Amino acid sequence: MPNTPIAELTDRARDIFRLVVEDYLASGQPVGSKALAQTGGVNLSPASIRSVLSELEQLGLLAAPHTSAGRMPTNSGLRMFVDGIMQVAEPTAQERAAIEKQLAEPGPIEAALEKTSSILSDISGAAGMVMVPKREAKLAQMRLVTLDATRALAVLVDEDGHVENRVLDLGAQASPTNLEQAGNYISAHLAGRTLADAAQAMRQEISSGKSALDEASASLVEAGIAVWSEDSAKRPVLIVRGQANLLDEAALGDIERVRSLIDDLENKQSVAELLDSAREAGSARIFIGSENRLFSLSGSSVIASPYRDRDGKVVGVLGVIGPTRLNYARVVPIVDFTAQSLGKRLG
Image (cartoon, rainbow, N blue to C red; front, side, top):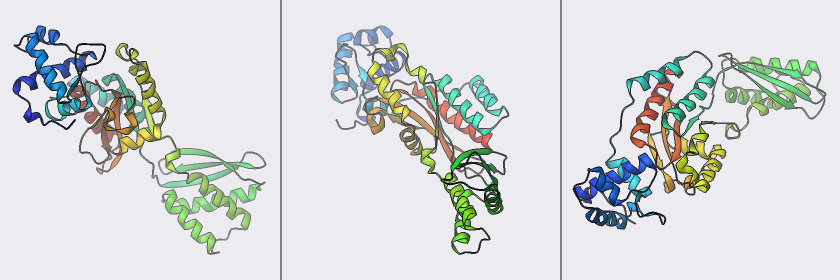
């Protein structure tokens, strides 16, 4: 069905369409002509309303489920609503203060990201998501510590004091002297550099024969670089909180859709790629149902907004995911405000 510009609808059709969508988003249930007539928002008889509903259905903006005489918006109808009719409700002063207060609490940035995801979930009644920024920290030190005959623990410390550990499979026994020499060599090259820059310099120096390392220590350096140069796509990049919110009473009537959505969320890399497509957006971007291949079966919607560091650089994306009957007018500005608040926390 071709897209219908909102300007082509009569005032009467536009008013009825708006009421159907708003009632559906509030209740999650199809809306019938009798219910519309009783609201008093339309000065028409149920028969006249049914006629308009039929026209809107023919235009592909509404659909009638088999089990109900009422109508509900299609994905195309929801897209028209959010793009041309919806009036957003800005966050209240209390909501803004609550978000800013939680994100201002001291602690590591990882805790702030977890908190952000929970905030979005609590306020939207859906699942909150935060894509973790890829860390390009400047590094300070690496130590290699023997675990057993063929394994060592690689401990990496960045300039902010952030510490990460990786188990290094050596494949053969390494002496404490070689481990210490390799760790010292790596640390000497890490100072003030990102891992990618340091790794390139070390590999060039070793391959050219300019390093003072023996063969065993050089092999340990290469192994140490490799364990920290994992493809970032293999690391967790997405924090999701509030999946239980997806199992509300309305959802239980369509449990297969909910199961499909939860399966989608388990595939965090695909969800992260969807969020990443909103990096260049100036404000919240809305993905509705089958507009995105990932959610074609679950029929879910995503509202996503980029967040920036103190220099205005986009470092990640956050948002919410839930059924297409999300309260877009309320959630969109909440997502935008939370993105702004998280950006201030990062600064």
